[in-house]
Amino acid sequence: MSTIACAIGLIVAGLAAPARADATGAIITSSVRAVVFGDQVPFAAAVTGDPACLGPRPIELDRQSAADPDWVPVALETTAADGTAAFSDTPTYTSSYRVTLAATATCPAVESEALSVPVRVRIDSSLLGSSLTAGSCVDLAVTVSPSKAGQAVDLLRRTASGWAAVDELTLDASSSASARPCFGWDDLGIVRLRARWPAQDALNAPSSGPSLAFRITQAPWMRRVSGVIGDHSVSVAAGEDGMFLYRHADTSPRAPASNEKLLLSMALLDELGPGYRIRTVAAAARVQGHVIPGDLWILGRGDPTVGPARLTQLAGEIAAAGIARIRGRVMGATTYFGRDWWAPGWKPEFRREEVALPTALTFQGNTAGGVHIQDPERRAAERLSTALEERGVAVGGEPGAGSPPHGLQPVATVRSGVLGGILRRMNVPSDNFIAEVLGKLLGARRAGPPGTIAAGSRQIQAWAARHGVEVTCFDGSGLSYADRATAEGIVRLLWAADDASWRSALRGSLPTAGQGTLEDRLAGVRVRAKTGTLTDVSALSGWVWSRTSDEWVEFSILSSGMPKWLASSIEDRIVRILASSA
Picture 1 (tube, rainbow, N blue to C red):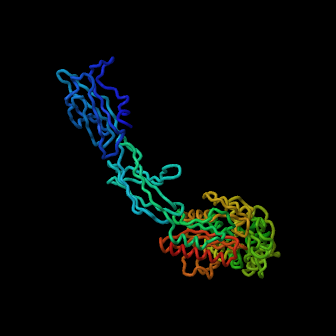
Picture 2: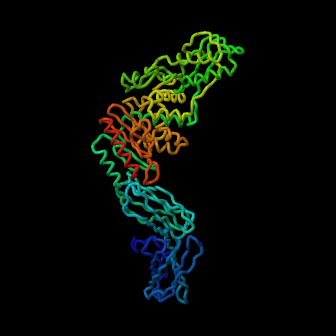
Picture 3: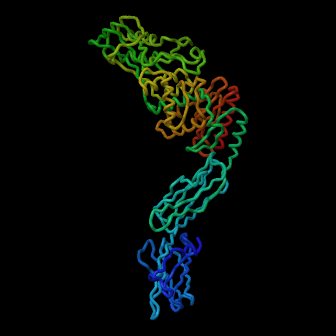
């Protein structure tokens, strides 16, 4: 604002009303509206009225600081013959100024109205680095004057809609702070940062530091990944500590294939914990002494690992409970899970070739002689009958299966191994049967029995949604060609897993190089990842250890429309680049 504009509205103290042409007064103006700490404030003063009282005459500049309510003199000058004088001051805090003239024998004392001058803090900021690659960090230093020790400064970043706060820094005893912001794939281009002190006391006005600009470019390894992808139909996302390092078509929904098992594993671990053990219970309507007068029921609750050893253990527990005779039959319960064995997007031959009937009470993977069976509950009852008789427990009738009556009381219970171990048995070989049994278990736990494939898939979707990721699920195994996920979404869910107490259990459940579905792949690379394979569909998602950053890098690679050997080759080359350079 101009000196003339600043002077508008200033009322000359000492002028009486009505004003007289010879009345003496004074005005004070400045050519600046506000200053930054350390800068001088120029003032112009003028005595008006009676020409005989204009000058030369002593005139004093007084200051009232925001830190001190008293008026104190800061400068003394002598007016020129025309009544003008000039001053300057370097205030620390926001202040008000006035000029005063003492009375003489012929001229009255004069005091101007006060002029307020806000004083903004000075922010000195610097950064190390002017041209950086994605994945790099800068060292930012900020000092605020006058001292604002213990207060905060905001770190701002320029966005399309203006300056936005991205961090808050606390000033130390020397009124300084530092930060090390890092930048990823989404920051490619010119980045502008600045520090701002929002007013936290009445001493100074808020202020912002200079804009610090630098360019983020692609690292050489990123260009190599792009070269590997070429024009193939591949989605890639890779990130570290919540920041994307590389992205290519990563928001395109694709069939995840057996990467669905990775999502199922996360939802199960979050619901049950890695140490959860699945019960299998022997129960009866009543027990009379050492005799069960009716049937003994085996109640499965979704343990996909039940086999002869587990049922032999259950027989031992029943005998240890004092049971000597079962007058009825040993019966396998066919309830708790629905007997559904299909999902949208499955090929008709999948039930015969890819996944056995997922039941709550399983027996030897629900497979006999390489064929998927439909009576696992009866076979489990048959094995328990034999094991009981081997222990001297008499069984009256032939084993069978069916829907148990209500009101059964537990006689004995056995438990599976820990969930973390079961997930490893699922993920390393990519076992579809275990996945669909565990998916039904998840559905029964969250929505109540009967557990179904559809109920389990809805819970996977719900878990992902709670972490801000949209997926489309129709099963737990990933056999469905209608399942959809994005590489971006899978990486975001891996970040959520990184913050969970069960992170190590999830990572440990995945194959490493040379194991399971990664046999003959990625030799020498420290990786934990889940594969996925359907006709013309391939996926690989998980963690790879970066030798550059000494950190795990989360990644997801989803592809379609190419033979498996080609897709696997692209996946492996990308993972090797991430391992050596990211």
